[in-house]
Image: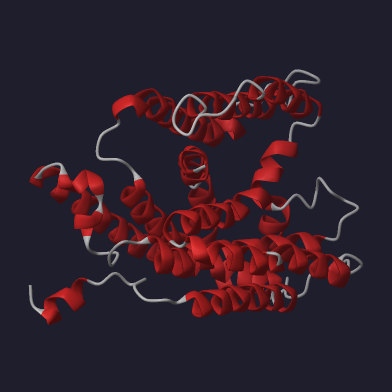
Length: 344
């Protein structure tokens, strides 16, 4: 192979970009915090419009590069993962239509879903504990029972927790990826990752005493008459946490989502891809046969087309598209759980 040909195949993360990575993460955190304070609603809606589709595509590309070509002894883990992802995502989408009208049981559908979710995670942890590197996973069952009791006492605690905790999973996955591919970068990353909780504390100090959200009168003009600020305040639990400033809740969620998008669209490709995103030969399953290679390439191409379709749908009817997207997005929220467990 010629020198020019070899250079063309170099992965995007070749070389020592540790300083650029650290500065990029700090820049992402600081700019996200500033935007979340200054324009929380506008940035929240615009962020979903711009990055919802692309970040999902990069998640898919990264996951394909880390999955083994064949399940082998992990078949049970993958079967349990797939059934849980599809089943729980479908049940979550059906929750608004499955409310029980009996007194005291109106929220039981949410509690049942939370129970299934917790024991699904417990099962995955237990299965993971029986594969290398092994660990004692018996503790997971009493923990699942304890959290299930909390889910029945306060039905909306777990779904609301997922709203704020899910964006942080990207930071954990990034840490695991650095431990695998750039171990010398990990300690530097952990030092700058402290900026995320510091930023949350700063948001609380700055905004918790502020009762009103700025820009609520501009959202409908910017995104269409059907888009209301209440859509986002309900999503972050403002109605369930009346003593907490809606301004802080929206700004904190906007900040975490921006960091989440930045990790997947910029930082994870920088450190986690063995080739350029469009090069599928580094994906293990694509090397099984020419048919698998075409299927992987076709799937990634369809994903790019869906990103374009999502942008068009957002432009035509933002509110409906956003509602459908966040319902379907539960699939990728759930998919991150077994993927993270495999990286532990």
